[in-house]
Image (tube, rainbow, N blue to C red; front, side):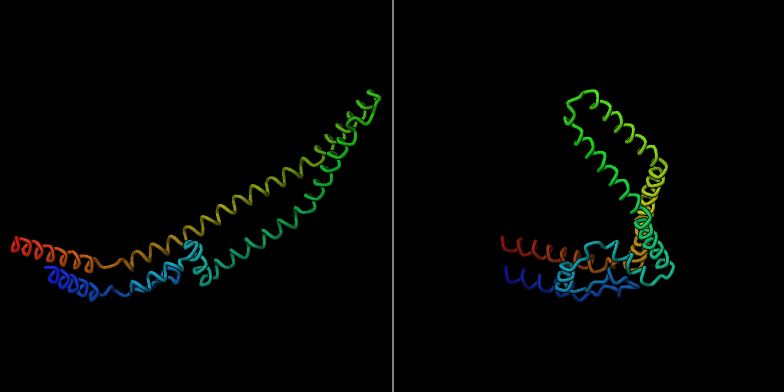
Length: 202
């Protein structure tokens, strides 16, 4: 009975392997794969870390309009860094000074009146400094907020572009159900034969 089972299993597997999948149509490089089990297994080991990014990059290489947009994003990001660096350094120096001055004054003046006068003077100078940069700080915060919005839109663009590619892939390359149906038919036939063999050997 075991020999019969093994023979029928081999026939089933051979018949299944003989069913060919349809050729893949217009498959993006990032989605291409081979049909044999060994090659698919090897392909999975080299699976992309981020398929969304790979699909977008592939579309980008073939789309001049997208390339221009990406160049604008990179260019503006560079200009942002250049435009804010001087203000950043200015703030860093002022904040360092006021921090150092507070530490310097702490416990240095035995005369409490002079200590209080020095602290008042330093507090006023710090408040004047903060008021003087208020307008620049608003502009900087606007730029930071815009950067976040640009990043969000950039990520949304990558999503919609790659999703459109995936939908096209799904539409044109949905596997045929025939190989699966064939396996089920072979399994049903094998189970029937097993049941008959079992009944004959009871």
